[in-house]
Length: 490
Ligand SMILES: [Zn+2]
Image (cartoon, helix red, strand yellow):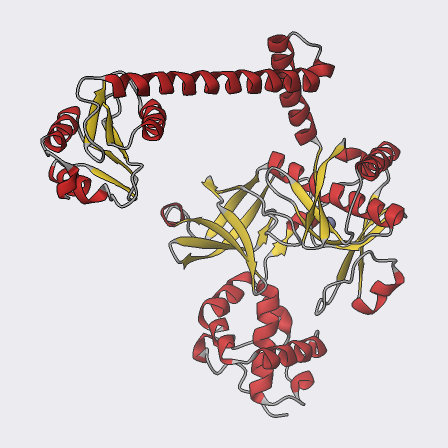
């Protein structure tokens, strides 16, 4: 039997004794290999890795070197690296210990990632984002997690670069944010129940889902949902919550997944399919975290449904979010009820009546403002000298008016006179110019002095408006324009 060159990249750092793979289960050796050798896996193509993985499985439990005898040295090396890599994967304790809020673990590595850092653990209670469910939060040795992501079979616990400097490889205490986990788990399980009931009662499948921080959504392959249907679905979910159906997790090989009446197609390439069953009601392949029974959902509210890419996007909340939502709505409802002096149950009618009344008042006010502007425009045009010839400038500063009122007065005056009218709203340091005569472009004589006095503005041949940094600059600009004897010259 020929001795195979087991670890060419490792040289003398490789194990020198022992004849079985069991020796590799020692964590210190794994860690050493991971740091020095597994990087070399990048030298292999993904198909080579898959081949090595299969070979590694075939080698499982073999005794070195006899079982390795049919493999080339390179492939065998690749196999072993793959075995090591699989052994190096973080144990997903969030499945085995779903209710654990803290546990001890080992920090294997702290790796810089752009402007942050990723902590690699030997096991984790933090669920990484996946399957439509957001990642958990919590702390590692007191350092707050920003995110948890899965990349290439690695679970990356993302922390700030500054926080990463406070961590080092070795023992670690993991503490979960249990309220966030509970909230996400409630909504995830609620989504299974809602999608299952929609399928069973309407025959319409859920195409995608998102468990959001505020609101969750599912996209259902149907062109429409009536309000009556949504209420019927919501009531059916409430009934299933009251029945408190157990939620059971099944693990099976991919070829056995078809034995379950699955609501959606399981992912490809998985060695084990995880099937989440709401007892007899819904079977779905899923990697998320789930409650033990539907009663733990507490309550699920469908907030609404809107058309989205040819489907219906149904939004919902569940659990404590329903309680908080109800509390907020009752608080707001009580406020409106007291303000309008109507019962809470009639606030919609009360608000509608208030809006109607408000609209009438706005219309009446607008009419009065237009009347007032017309009156002031007449006043302006009656001032001494206001009857000068056409196309000459009539300027006025209106001390207490804002720009809105100046615009109303100017538009009214424009209809009454063929002069160029320049009105300054001293309160706002703004001005507006109006001209109703064709062939006159007021920009020709406004633009230059405006800029000379530090103003900014724009407009067209018959309307121009601008802003000055101070009342003094605006007044000086108006006086400069008034000194121009006639616009005919421009
Ligand atoms: Zn799920």
